[in-house]
Length: 100
Image (cartoon, rainbow, N blue to C red; front, side):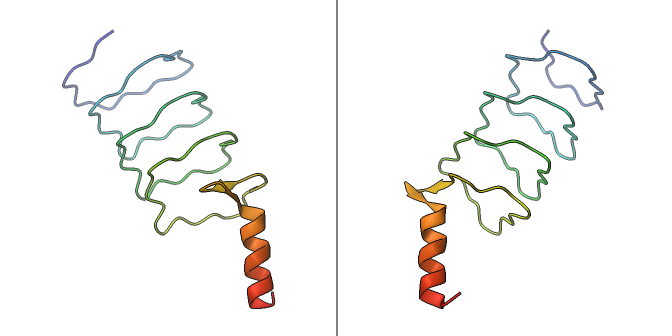
């Protein structure tokens, strides 16, 4: 099914849209609840102000992403790597440097 230049609210429930493609689409204020995005690719997206909660991002890769002002709250960060450096090592070095 192809939808071109559609300007309407769309409610989708219990649907299999796997392998779909959204290109040049405005999904502002859209709610994604109980969805599976495993293996999805998100590129050239403006997600500023986006809220992500109760989500599993294990194994996700963020590449060339602006994370300015991002707040991580009550997140499991085991195994997180930043530019090839384990976050745990960074935090240990920070605590040692600051006496914390």
